[in-house]
Amino acid sequence: MTVTAMTAGELAKKVIAKESFFILDVRNEDAFEDWKVEGENIQYLNVPYFDLLDGVEDVLDQIPTDKDVVVICAKEGSSIFVAEMLSEEGRNVHYLQGGMKAWSEHLEPVKVGDLKDGGAIYQFVRIGKGCLSYMIVSDGEAAIIDATRMTDVFINYANELGVTITNVLDTHLHADHISGGRKIAEAVNGVYWLPPKDATEVVFEYEPLEDGRTITVGNTKIDIQALYSPGHTIGSTSFIVDDAYLLSGDILFIDSIGRPDLAGLAEDWVGDLRETLYRRYRELAEDLVVLPAHFMIIEELNADGSVAEKLGTLFAKNHGLNIEDEAEFRELVTGNLPPQPNAYQEIRQTNMGKVVPDEDTQREMEIGPNRCAVR
Image 1: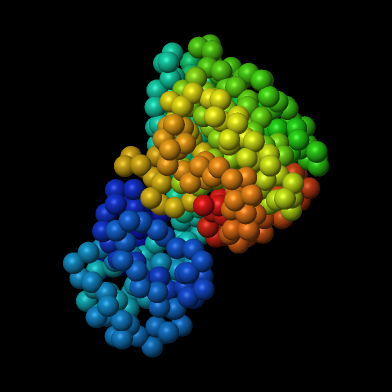
Image 2: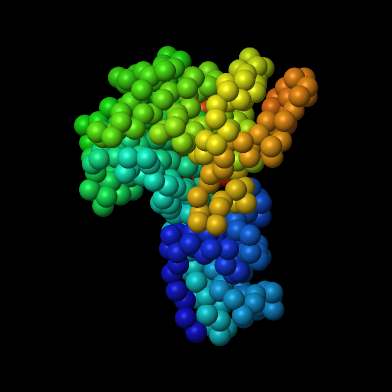
């Protein structure tokens, strides 16, 4: 029987298409429980690699023969070994090429929609990490928002579209992943924008993103309006694009809201978070399409793989937007916090420019699920 490598991109397409398949995850139980490939029609079996060193006979009857089987480990080596043993037992199996590290880094581009004057907006779904980045394209120019450290993906995609990246923006100083914004801006000789209230400790030059500031992309006057929206961080800034899209950063998600504690100031910032969600956002048009910087659960993906919903729908359905009692809201976002992201303090230091880890260290810092939300 055969053993076939499956790339992270191929696996992502199966997840987005909601295909039914089977995963044999051979990482240790704690790693599997903390973070795994998620999908609506996935069947799982977690058996640590070291329990399979003497053979796979004991698990054969738990592995189906009527659907695709993908063996997954941290980096791929263990999954190849186990997949080969399954092949020797007469099974056709795949292994995830690059393991969970590759899954963490894959970006799936999805076109969200067209803009009024001929442009378009694209979402880059980092499906294994829950991060969402954006490219706004108009008249030969592009702006990138909340880029990940996989900068080549954005630069290459812009080249494919035949556009020049002129502006790169971060909605806030990220704590769960390393920003690629400044690196992209340097590579393309563009402008890097950052909210100044999040940038008091940065050691590099940037253009300040301030409330009411308008950035134009192309000659078609796509206005990216900066809307000061603190709560996740003190400088968190939302963008209204083309009067049609609300890029909410880590303030508002489809099924949850942002956490206020990643700078150690949850009690101080919870009031800002409520003010943003319950006043500033309530003043916006309900037909704006919300495009967040993260998703928390796989069910937030739409049928086309995008993560987007109208603001009015979120006001009706998102629990975090419907807590009338302020004390209850405060308890939700300060007393119900998930574990903090892996190495988040080191990630913040990296995004300030204070430390410059090598590539392998950056990968290790980012390993794990998205933990920017409370629900």
